[in-house]
Image (cartoon, rainbow, N blue to C red; front, side, top):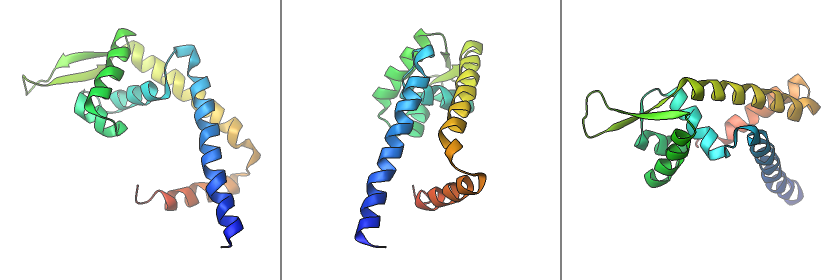
Length: 140
């Protein structure tokens, strides 16, 4: 790989990531959620009965930050805290029906937006991009 092609990839990959983040943030405006809050809702919906420490670990954030994110989701009625069934000291975070509905709406909107974003690529190019990114992220 030449230096110029390396520089191009080094510049292009973050630009694509920023474009996707901007789109993602705009997409979430109807629900008044940040990307971080939407990811936390996804974690709670996917891993029913998560501890705050599990949410923090999944999002790769400090437990204090996870508490703040869950506080907002709870205020909006998307999650609720419940006692852990086996550990009286622990609290579980579970999605409410409203939270599950919002997550499903967000997933549909994100899928439609991704289809639009990646529409410039053929099916073959999308598959190749997926394989390539998978290789780059294999150790992540």
